[in-house]
Length: 442
Length: 112
Image 1 (cartoon, chains in turn orange, yellow):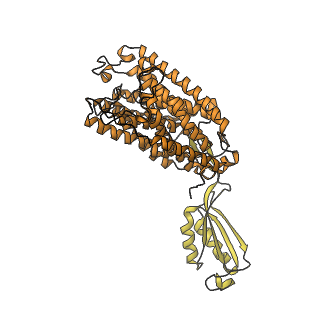
Image 2: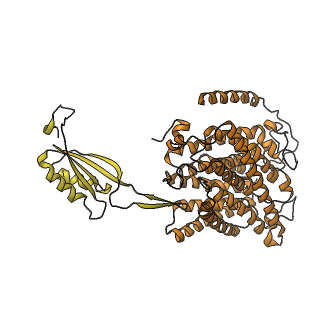
Image 3: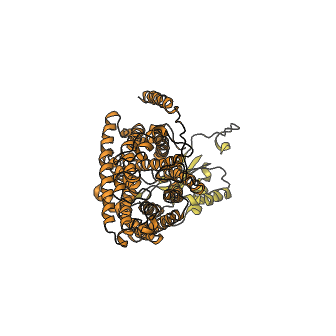
């Protein structure tokens, strides 16, 4: 069974190799406004965001699972990076960001054709379009990689690979287009600076659905699921926290003051989120855990993501505080009440955090930060007299929730017809490292 | 010949080793084990999920001595491993049928 899967994979890879070998012709553009400073920053930001997945998220997650599943958890991040990168290059970018139809992009950038040395995207006019492609690719990668946390310890690797490919194309790409690629949510005035809906809510909802579809881990609630090595998780958190400078700061798409505002709000939200969770846990459980601190930081970071380029630094403190508290409640009370096994709290942190931040963006948005020559009035929020923005944000939250939830469910069910989503119970007990990958930590 | 097996608290290993060397017992095997007796475990909490850890880390040492040295060996271990708190451990003495020094081929008491 496994050898046939291997041969089939090789056959598909060979076919794709021939297809990818057709190089796109370099088109000559007229005047380009490519700015050296912006480009330099965006190259750095791309590296930071890619680092957030490998090894940031890989470490963050693998430190929290049991020893027998550490390598398998890392494999999911690595494989996700590779698969998403190739699919993004082939068709993902084009369908997300090419053309201006309300529902989906066009194929005009299939295999990145038409991109030359001087080409720029309308969404990032001062940097090379190819750089914009790669920057957006890192966002796609981490969104898909986040979902793996919800089904950690029990998903079959082959099913996961199919899921990565399908989810990127059918869930991430449309939503990215709607919010960032000129689609109908952008036209409606949705404010999502760096991915509160596209990344966090999206992955969170998908994770919740996946947790329900795959079912609880064997021994959930009875066995000892204590984390293998939280120091790895802390290191991962550090890489994520620092990488977020590229995630939110880079979403300014330029080396400018707005990026500085985004970075500051982001950092303050992370700090406040960490402390909020820490104090909540200290008062309710008696001790401030390290796991709680880092989770609170990530909750704050996820929540500030949509707001970062639209709000003032001190708003980051408020948003971090609210997110830290709500996500703490979601990961302790709500999870137990709803009875789902979201192994690494993807929904509780990213789903709830992303939704909270998206709504709060509508509350705190400051027009001066988003004002530009094309839109001199900027995008004000509730506190600047524009109450309607909160409703627009809610519209985005509901839309993404529905699309992500329904499509994830359908995708999992379809994949489940081809290959079992879970590993067998004996394999789950033995551990994914040995049974899925033939490796073990010594 | 007797095998003296002692389960002790991990931080006491060096004290026990020093005490045995002092009475002329050279040679010991130590392994890391988990165990419990009357000592209760502890609770760990991870994001709201509580786990009771019942098995506590201990060190198991095995010392082979001539039968006439068993009493002194046991007393030395007790004196050095004891803290007075629950969880200090236990000592078991079993008989050894045969002993061989691999390098020289010496047997029984000459091998200890």
